[in-house]
Length: 265
Image (cartoon, rainbow, N blue to C red; front, side, top):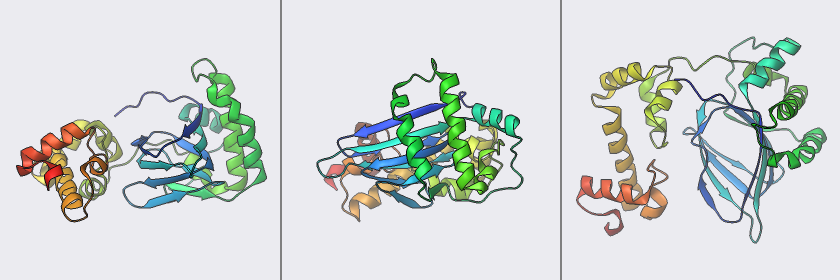
């Protein structure tokens, strides 16, 4: 259930072509500026669309799929600050910030425009080329600056930023039915549902009467069959959407289940 320790980081993204995929698991809170293009995000519950000029805050410990679309003849560009837990805990001690109550805010928050946000993002653009390992202290200072800016404009974010608890035990069936299309390991599903891997497997079999691996494969193939047969989608557009890593593995599993390759439906 443990994560690799995260680091303060500034990430500059640039794409010339449409890109599917992106992070499947968001480990840390993220503060982002959308410079150009369009970003479509699906978190299993809702689709979010972000466009040029948007500032957003993304909560940690969630699954999400991204579709990055550059504008006609242009580039898709974003600049993001990874708000790592170590820096946030340091800031909590330094300023006495604590989370006072349980938060119920959306996973993706569109922030109100502010000139200070834009000035801050302009100032950190060169930092996108710095190695997190070699520049940890410097990058941690920029993360602290970002957090203080966020708290200045959105005081309610304190309840999210300084909540250092791990996910609590939740309804396993509801979560899996909403998130089976995400291509992450069982340990990640276990963590997000508030369980150890062993408890997750035991609870899963009690709920679904089969192993997690068998159930995930069946659900993903059923969804793929529906999208191809009923919606007319291409297999090459479907396999990532339903949680497979590559087209060849998807085609093999599909033919093994239905006796026909997905391209021939």
